[in-house]
Amino acid sequence: TDDEESNVHDGRCKIDYENESYRGMVFVVHETRGMLVLNHFGAPENTSTKAGGTRIPGGEIEEKEYLDAGKQTQYAKMQLQLAAREGAARHLYETTGIDMRNRLQRLTPAILQMNPPVDAKGVKYLRNEH
Image 1 (cartoon, one colour):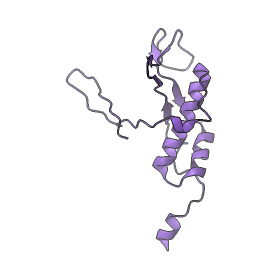
Image 2: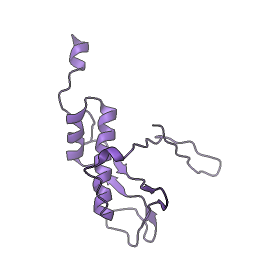
Image 3: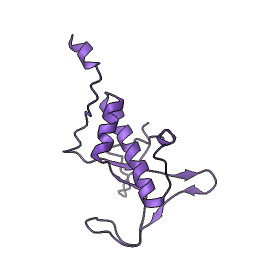
């Protein structure tokens, strides 16, 4: 039946990563030292990042990460979380040397609202929806 076929895991990624752009970010929190924020001293080419600011480690999820996630589950939302986790760990390693790539289970998803509420001053309030 159609219902039975929809429950078959074919190993394919169901996320349209060729037409949509997703990013994985890492909020690194140490229990005594607080949250890791990177100082950004120069604006790299082709970005809108201002020199002298701070940023959270992370960036674009790569195709390999989507394909790896597709092999693990058939559910698109879970595939996106898995791909973002793998991409975030890669970016964390590339920018800081902190290697969580083989300990992905330690990275807990924080799913933020797509359209967070905005107060009268224009400040957006993000909250974890996980």
